[in-house]
Structures are given as structure tokens and as C-alpha cells.
Image 1: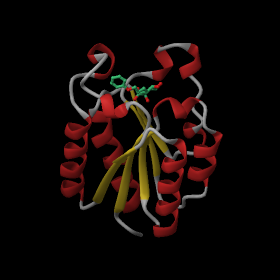
Image 2: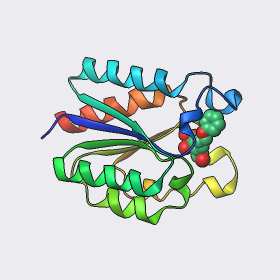
Image 3: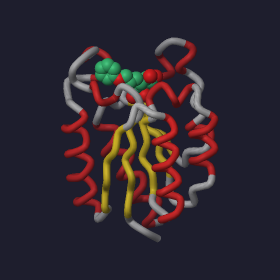
Image 4: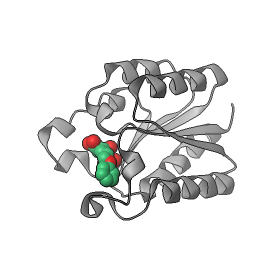
Length: 146
Ligand code: CA2
């Protein structure tokens, strides 16, 4: 199976490190993406990182992953709780899909407790801060090596 992984970040995550540090920490998206590339190198994964505030573009990128057999590590931001379209796009992937949330969505407002992404992901790393992305990549490597 391919060892490529697409790390997708959804709406507002481009603002990481610039607002709400008590919830999301002080690392920027660039810091997170650099740590994903470094963890990928350690794990022998070819990692590419992208961020969009647009649901349709995220779906187009998931379709690209589908066509190329690429695994997805995704923090789809608030679309996690609303987007049946993203869930449907992820559902057809045969490569691993791991959901990430920086904060613990289950300890926050009730509307964040539902995850459509979680209904189709193979694993989830929730509430571990930005270190959760590296953990999700290790989870992908474990699944590919199994
Ligand atoms: O905890 C997470 O990773 C979330 O996916 C982040 C989303 C939120 O809607 C989800 O419920 C949980 C929000 C991302 C907002 O991103 C910001 C980052 C820094 C500053 C302001 C917003």
C-alpha cells in the first residue's frame, strides 16, 4: 500500500497560534505542518499538508487521496460537526483515515460532541493538543505496517 499521507486542516485552523491559545495552544499551522513532515520522515511516510476554509476544496482533496490510495489525517474543524459531504467523501477511502482534534471536543459545548468524520474514520486522536497530529501519523504507520 502507498505510504503517502495527506494531512488536511479545515476552517480557521490557519489562525492557529494567533487566537485562543488557552484552547488551541501557541503553535502556528506552519509549526504543526513542519512537525508532521518531520514525524513522517521518521516513520517513512511521505507527508503533504494542506489547509482550506472551503468545504468543497477539502472534498476535492479527499477525492485526490481516493484516486491515489493516499491515507488522510484530518482536522476538519467545525465541518467535523456539520458536514455529511466530508463524511461521504472520506467513507470511500480504502487507505487509513485518522481524525484529529486539538481540543477535547467531548468536554466542550454539546454541538461539538457529534463528529460525522468520526463515523467513518479508522481512528481518532482527540484532546492531545497539536502533538495529536504526530500521534495520528504514528497510527497511520501502524495500520499500514499491520
Ligand atoms: O479542537 C479542534 O481541533 C477543533 O477541530 C478545532 C475547530 C473546532 O470548531 C472544533 O470543534 C474542534 C476550530 C478551529 C478554530 O481554529 C482556531 C485556531 C486558532 C485560533 C482561533 C481558531
